[in-house]
Figure 1 (spheres, rainbow, N blue to C red):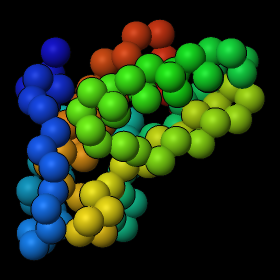
Figure 2 (cartoon, helix red, strand yellow):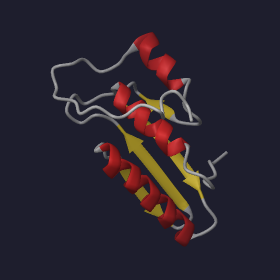
Figure 3 (cartoon, helix red, strand yellow):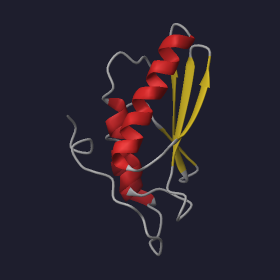
Figure 4 (cartoon, rainbow, N blue to C red):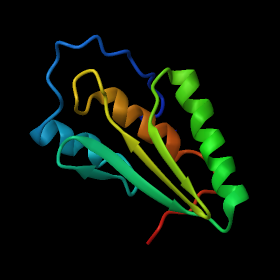
Length: 114
């Protein structure tokens, strides 16, 4: 288990600045194949062999999101799942976003797009 994945998400009450600069880059380096989009959100796409396995991945992500009370945007298509994470309350990234991404990274049997 990664150091980030061992932590728990903390609800954001607002009033904090989104992560920027070196702090944001340091968190990003701890993830596997996630993109930081315009310093605003994290995005990762998975390629799976069929709709059934893509749906199973979505359900596993949903279980983690419920447990952490931190919910990503998830896009499901045949053989493809895209996950986007950011903290809506501050319209940017917090440590909890990286924690959630790290927990998602630990789901077994997923394959990343090249």
